[in-house]
Image (cartoon, rainbow, N blue to C red; front, side, top):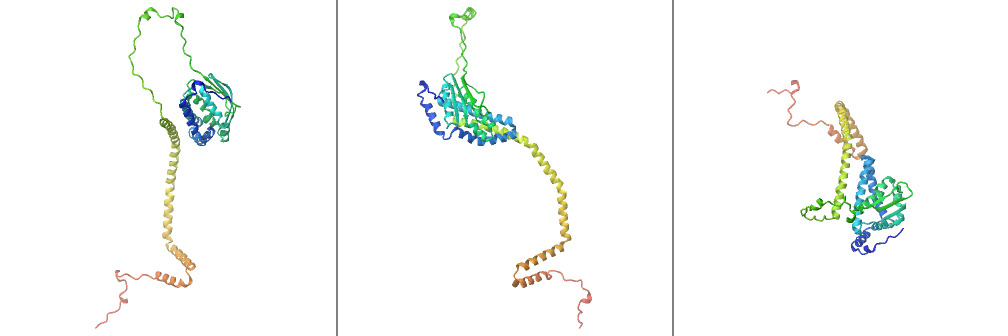
Length: 347
């Protein structure tokens, strides 16, 4: 890999140097490790989105989200470097191959007009292949490259026809500066009669436009504002997903509710009939049920109560079986015959 040299005019840039230094201090993990951590969360999420929304729609949402993040990262890199030319982008490319050999890069051309290189070894593709998500690896990693260059500079254009992620032997990166050329005007001494202004036109003085108030400079959004914008965008995506899931689930939920209601209505007569049968059985076999209960209680007592306490238990049982004496407030029984009454002795 060819090491890029910083132009003399950009050697002393304290702000860009401090930004790069603070960024390197925060980068405690490699880019490959970072993508692996993201993939552990994003791959299951996208797979679920495929089931709920369809493969094409799920991939579209994921790709647009990832590309939007990469575009913002490219703009942040240009702001940190305080430059957005192609030579400044050389430093960005060098960081890709410097992450422990995660990318093996062969540089073909590297100057102010072009940046050509091939990636002949890619551990990112190997990682996504091990995770069974080569199709998502292109969305989560490869598709970032175009958006990153767009965010870095509107004039930076990337051409890439193949990637290792898609099965090619190498990735061909070709960066070019595609700034629009200014319109050429003929010198005044070369203007013909057709191009020279007429006397009538020259005699008319142009109207002086009214003075306008100077436009106030637009303040750059803060990190918090950028985070809020991302949160709003992600929240909108999740909201649309939830709405579509609810719309798809509504017919199934209504069908299940109708099935449960019909089952309850169908089972109601059977439940009522079973309850009535149980009630009739208890009323018909009341004495038998009591005898079975008493027999069971007696068997249990014989097995549990010690022999020395059985007389006490038997006495208690006989006492319970003895009919209760009439209460004092009960009326006397007048159903006996007069012959049974004792005769009153006469004087």
